[in-house]
Amino acid sequence: MKDKQGSWRALPTPEWTTGHTVQFFIDNLLLIAVAFVSGALLVWPLVRGRASGPTLSTLQATQLINSRNPQIVDLRKADEFAKGSLPNARNLPAEKISDRLAELKKDKPVLLVCATGTSAGRSAALLRSRGFAEVFVLAGGIAGWRDAGLPLRS
Image (cartoon, rainbow, N blue to C red; front, side, top):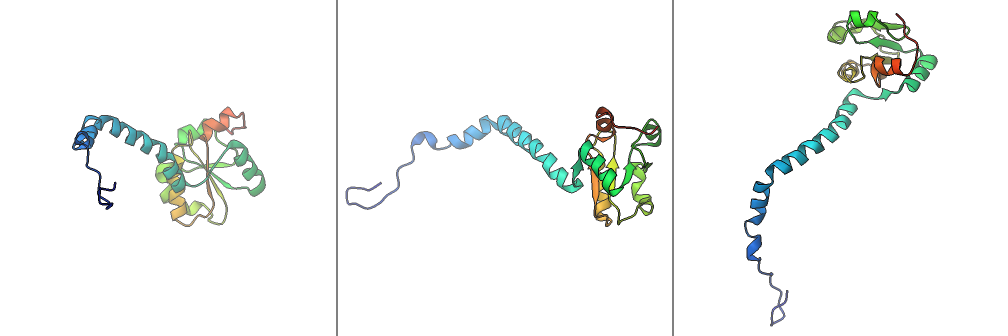
């Protein structure tokens, strides 16, 4: 704002704004925390998805199986695997996969299958860190495969 002499000067700060900004944050701390946490929860799947790599729908997985004959690795426990698995799948439980990586070929694609598609990401990140270039996770896991009406081997 210009004064009477035509030079610029700062506007005075109104009395009601002094200290009110800090008080606003103190009064609304819980609301601000909830907003921050909900934003973080929205971003988390994106961050985690980048680490685990691409996920394939049941249609995409079927196309991969038919065209490239990937190594299908079922990460569930042996008793769950025995109840039904994808055709040509081998059982390498997630907790033992790091000890049994020698059973997999690095030059072939790997399709990881878990119960619901949520826990295979950790194993996918492990395989990538050990030099496996093409690692995919079945979205929805065996439950998604079953819901799509696709064949299971028992």
